[in-house]
Length: 455
Image (cartoon, rainbow, N blue to C red; front, side, top):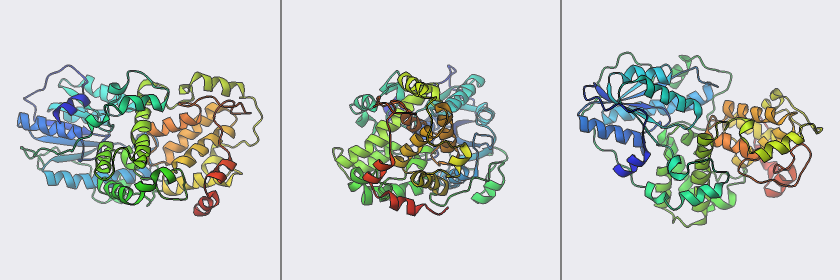
């Protein structure tokens, strides 16, 4: 296990461990869980080695882009559960109101060592380097939410999924091991860190945050590790055997529904694979289909946002895609819609409207419909850059798994990334086309419309 942590570990500054510090600090952000949390495992090991208490802090800010009640409710359900579970372990878990950087520095200056969990998005990467540059104790980062760390897979942006697959598959089994936390030798649950920002009731929590309450909360998903495990078990025992056949059919519930839990770090992809392989052989076609989504495409997404500085912008798509879209920018659109039209599901297309209603109503859109959804925004907007921005805006505002490498990668795919040129058409040029007829031929789309007709 130690060797596996070494492969996930990165020093963010050159300071030594400070043995005179009061505690060992883990600033939790991306990995909101205890199980299969290598950052927590490393911190416990260092705490035991130094004979110092371990403190875990979680910073909650209401200033983050698209801070709204929908995804805060989901996140806070998991945090309330985590608080209880950490107390059971005898580990201090302190929730603080404020931004990530100032919180890590405030508690980090009295620590022996600061441990951060890795996040690949540009803003969160900037936070971590700010923390490391402003503290004079060792700051390390642990790659916690992928199977294989990005730099171990590739040192450049990979343009196609098969290239990532060919690099991950030969080494993947080296990163899938049973996980067990060592006992914490110095209990810290009673350690005094001053005033805490915590409420055991999620609604009281939400009322104490200055966030957008106009985006409705949803009851479709409840946040936290325990709920993620329930969904995983349901998937393994009731869905996985038919996953390959039905995963692209939004009228049948054969998806794992784990993407919001992966986004908030409620569950590790390593644990998911480990549990699946206890029940299915790796070679099973359904397992292969699922691992292609969970590992290959998900880790391609991390590669994309790590090596492409424009990952959430139109400028980040391939040159051939930009060229063909720019050449057709002046083409007459059959339909033109505003952001408000899209947001309120007010287009001529009942299939598209149903996908948007699913998003508004449940906080998640079926993956196959997400592709159709973004491609039609491209067709029905006067400018491809505006279409890209609208897709990101709606994704980040309403998806429980929005603001995530997967979402930006999926939108970019709809604009030509990780794909090849197709036959040229008006408006979209050589970008892959999706049609209403294609939906009708693939599954019973009328059944999908009926499911989400009321909002």
